[in-house]
Image (cartoon, rainbow, N blue to C red):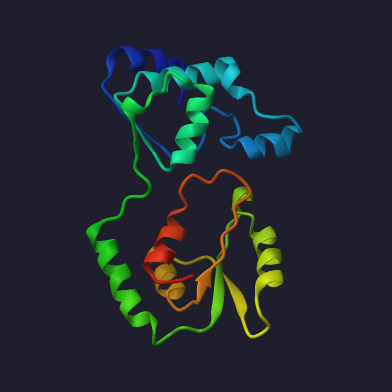
Amino acid sequence: MNLNLIPVIVANLYYFITEYDYKFCRYRSIELHKKETGEECNCHDSDYGKFISSFFAGSEKIFWMSDQQKERYQERFPFLTDEKSIRLTSVFSVEDLEFIEKLRIEKSEKNNKKWAIIGSNSWIKGIEETKQKLEAFLPEEYDYDILSGLDYKSLLRKLSEYEGLCFMPLGGDTCPRIVIEASLLGLE
């Protein structure tokens, strides 16, 4: 969004924010900020961070993906009070929940004793680091696969065949939906 629009929006609109990451940081991740610059994130003290905080302050409600995410914001912007904050986590349609329930019921027939890692090009998902941890952790009779390139329902269907999901993000991933879905599917 054009930052010049923020004062107009704050002054003229009634709006809600659903926050998925850390918009106050130019990198949208304080860990990635440090990785890229070698310095702790101080974006919240910059003009950019102040513009973003004014956008949040002007909203009616802020829906957070996790308590940790909300706390990271409130540490930097104490005026973002609990009164306007709601921890939402991920939202599921009834159709998605029914599909997950169906897959969970069928799961016991298909458990392949493997673990799944969700493939991603995103740095924060830590695919290589997750593989290393999983290889050190797994007993010899277990293995893992990297699942990628699947549409949503195909991914859930494939994931339901696994013993567990290994997900070890490198930063403050706010509320990884895939972890919730894996849990609902009955995976470790």
